Amino acid sequence: MATCSVLVAGYAWLPDAAPTAGGIVVRWAVGLGVVATVLVWQVRAIARSHHPVRRGVQALVLVVTLFLLVFAKTYYLLAADGGAFDGPLGKGDALYFTVTVFATVGFGDIVAVSPTARLLVTLQMLGDLLLLGGAARLLVTVARNRRREVDDTGHQG
Image (cartoon, rainbow, N blue to C red; front, side):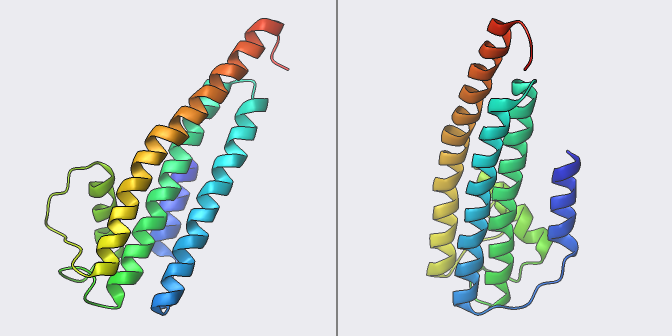
């Protein structure tokens, strides 16, 4: 939880330069690359862990947090250009919107109106499904396999 708190604090307090539309896409793609890299790193860590289930839960929380922050930052930057959403988005608003999409709540108080914003929201929804289904399953499978190895050998090494 400490790592997630640091990530959210960094999201909230680090200053942002207003990039061009192309720069927003590059930042988004780099952000997703970071999420994928962290996921791979976490899978390897689980495979070596003495406590794979605990490590798997930590990994899932970390990967989901990073994923959500990448989209929140992207929505925030996209909204700064104007016209992407039905109103301006601060960092808190962008994070709130990202979580409502992730949770499939969709209150409707913030609406993506530009084609680019709608495409990005659609990609987030698809990514949410892949993340929850695919990444969660991957982490659980690796943790379960490692736990069997630890149990079968009678030691945790």
